[in-house]
Length: 85
Image (cartoon, rainbow, N blue to C red; front, side):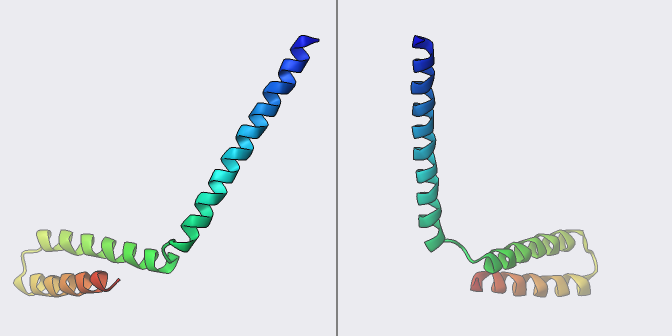
């Protein structure tokens, strides 16, 4: 019968640990929501970064001077938009 009592004590301690973990997670969520990044802004930033990476890749691969100038203008515009965010 002593073993059954130990099992209850172990279960109770695991339960208390889990409650403490949940409380910590909830506190992190609460504190994170006030300083959370706007999801639309995050999506826009990521989109601009991907477009910037693609333009840089195209700039490195392009030999045509007219196209290079177009790409460089696009790069400058993307960097400006990214800086505004």
